[in-house]
Amino acid sequence: MLPFLLLLPALGYGWGHWEHRLDLYAPQRFVWTLPAWALIHAGTLWLNAALDRDQDEVLFGRAVAVPPQSTRLGLLALLLAIPIAAQASTLSALAAAGCGLLAVAYSHPRLRLKGDPLGGPLINALGYGLLSPLAGWAALELPAGPDSRWILPLLPLGLLAPYFVAQVHQEQADRQRGYRTLVVTHGPRACIHAATLALGLALLWGCLLIALGVAPTQAAPGVLPWLVVLAWLAWQGRRGPSAALARGLVLRMALSTVLTLALVA
Image (cartoon, rainbow, N blue to C red; front, side):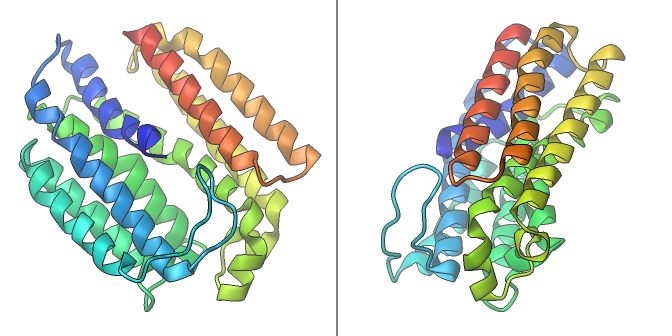
């Protein structure tokens, strides 16, 4: 998942360029966010692995035994990310610290917000959808323009889609752990419907921003592949859940993101 996760600070960095109409600016600061977010991603997954001890299918790769030092390594990775992100900017370091705290709250055995019906989605939306792009944007160290407030809901909404779809094949495991995730309370189809709704709202919001000139009008042709992804996801909801659904959605969303960025570039 790492290549997809590194797109998130890059999106924030790119948005800052669009907002201020810049040529390439401060790349020597932005590059520090990449190793920092690689550590955040690794630390988050290691803490999650230490909590779940999951041996089921994973999105990309193969299931392996969880090393006993996973918790210590996860915490160390999250801590190391902060001074590395500070080389980009103070705000980037604060975003890294925020992601670290969210990761601990998500996977700490006493908190286990991963299993909370509201805590799990909220942590994913804030960490991946808000703080991660914020870190890339903060590397520019420029003031926020008036358009930034309107772009804020876009990524948190869109990234709820893969979060809900990833639950589809985890129903039995989540039940055994005592979690109250959406797949436990309402079943796999409800997860697909929630993902379709989240992605649809994000796409609708993005189209509105393009129409108002807040987002780049060059991104308008990029709406088409997103509509294809949305239609595919809705069709999957009628067809029924499958273990490969989350992998397919992540790949399609990543490809659509790259195509949209290429159009704007």
